[in-house]
Image (cartoon, rainbow, N blue to C red; front, side):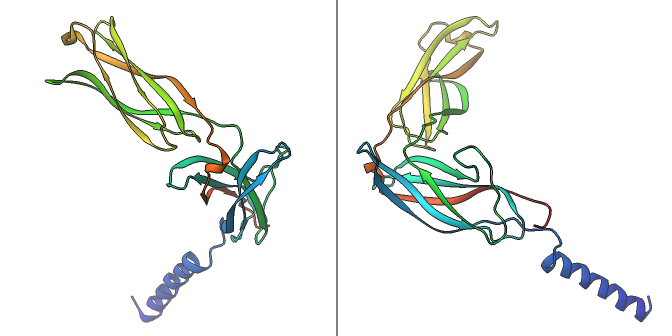
Length: 230
């Protein structure tokens, strides 16, 4: 390879590297929270309400077609009481966009419709000297503390005959908390058990009063940006 071709190759490599690192033609998607704070007020009915009030800026080069901020509400001892979202959808269910450099003033309400939920992560049939049982994990994947939760396990023979069923219960399961549950087998013929099923059979919650909220956090969630420059 002669000297001229070598110089051209080096120039080409440097040009491609410059474009990839510092001169991308694609618009960037970014949202930065400028600040937020916990705000407690008394409504017209005399009830105390709490919320997260803050602002965020579109500091990318793309227009944001959708953005969300997740807020978390904690008690004084650090217990996660509830979570909520602010999204670029108005109270009239109308979406709005955020142009580059535009500031969004958001509010995440603590007093809102709750969404209790329990998700079974895993389960296994165990047989040893301690007995026969189902061991598993379940997580509170809702947005409120579960004051009560119940999981039912059913034991079957290989021929799909139901042998017995049992339950496991827990109380005050925090948001995001994982529960290690055990369902003992209380029926006869444990040696005939071939497989098991588990399901959530009951959940309940008691909304925590706003006065229990001591501090909050907020972080950027999902973003969807326009592929066209605004």
